[in-house]
Image (tube, rainbow, N blue to C red; front, side, top):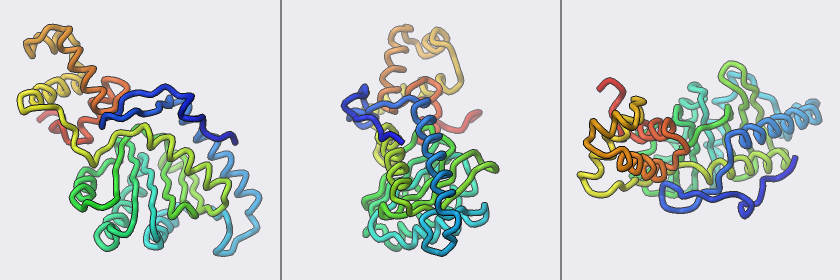
Length: 269
């Protein structure tokens, strides 16, 4: 499996916090995920006969995934990297383990949580921010991948949609490196949830929320501009600035991000 492209070969774009993200297309991430899954499967075959507790790769049944994640979180000595996609059961179990660890050992660990918008727990993100430890939560559309990397030496990986995923507990160095590479690539291009996004003064913030509501509701530029008393050109400038601040690549994505960040009330309110 080939390693990730050098960041110097990628096109940068502004992040939600003012830095530069090295963008990767969704298709590139999906392809890397397919390669990772193939690598895991080939490694499973090589180590299938090693069924001891210390096996380099061990397949997990559905009922074993959350207990394995809980055990790894508890065993972490210095670092946790977590990725949550759309599997609600795995997300619930992982959040529960992370909350316990944040409360009991948060100051002694560095933790990164990468979430699909559907897997974001805003209450947990606020807890992380208030705790003031070396924990960070980011959000981006995720491929069907749930993963937990502990101290860079062990990982639980579940690849595939809920109900059709295949999970493994992995200590094989080759697969671990592939998982770390994929995680780093997606992480660098994600929106930070544990830092406040500043839109400016109160009036501007109120205006941004009104624009976000129109984006979420799918209102055309012309109708939205007329409702807000803007020219279409001014409205579109607001939209472009909002997308940059949120790290969104499309208007729809900006609306999803805004809802996950708590910038908008639930639809229908």
